[in-house]
Image 1 (cartoon, rainbow, N blue to C red):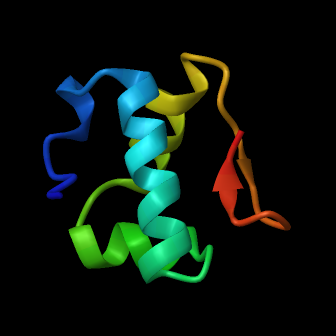
Image 2 (cartoon, one colour):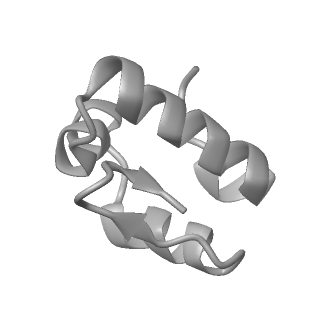
Image 3 (tube, rainbow, N blue to C red):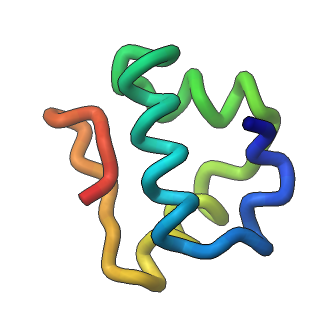
Length: 63
């Protein structure tokens, strides 16, 4: 799944996909995920925060 168009995605679906990618491919490292997909970390976090999801570094996922 390409996250390059994350800004237009449904927020709950986006959270699910990002968490899956974090778990399966990036060992919970958000910096590696955004670097791999060449996306803006601040914009991704803002999009997910708009639906009440925050990144929990200790868990390596958005909740």
